[in-house]
Each structure stands twice: as structure tokens, then as C-alpha cells.
Length: 84
Image: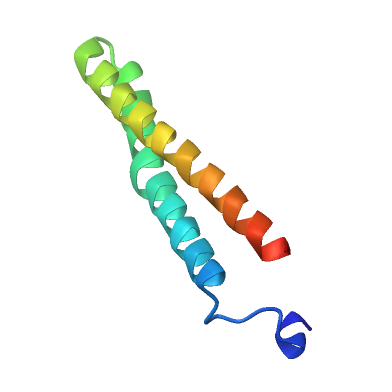
């Protein structure tokens, strides 16, 4: 219905920006955060866990999480402009 009314178009820069941001968030979540979390879990479950490795992986997750927060604010801004 939105496409029929001309409100929704894949050629709109806001729609393209939303698709780009959602793609980045998905890649970060499934490509970086989830594998690192699994590595951390496997390392913690070992008899003698390497705390330096756990700290390094956690720091990487913290940086990616900060980046995700910025992209989530960006997607809110994009959605607000789409509603106008």
C-alpha cells in the first residue's frame, strides 16, 4: 500500500540508509558479537581459562557494542525522518 501511494520507494535515500545501517548491525551482531561470545563461553568452561584471552575478547565485544549503539541511534534518526 505504501508503495502504491508513492510513500515507500527503494530509491529514497532514507530507505537506502536504513538498509545499509540494518546490514551493518546484522553483520556486527552475527559476525562479531555472537562468535566472540561463544569463544568467551568456551574459554570460561575450560579447567584453566586464559583470563587475558577472555579480557581481550570482552574488550572487542565492548567496542563493537559501542559502535552498535551509535548505529542504533542512527537508525532511530532515519526512522524519524521517514515518518515525516
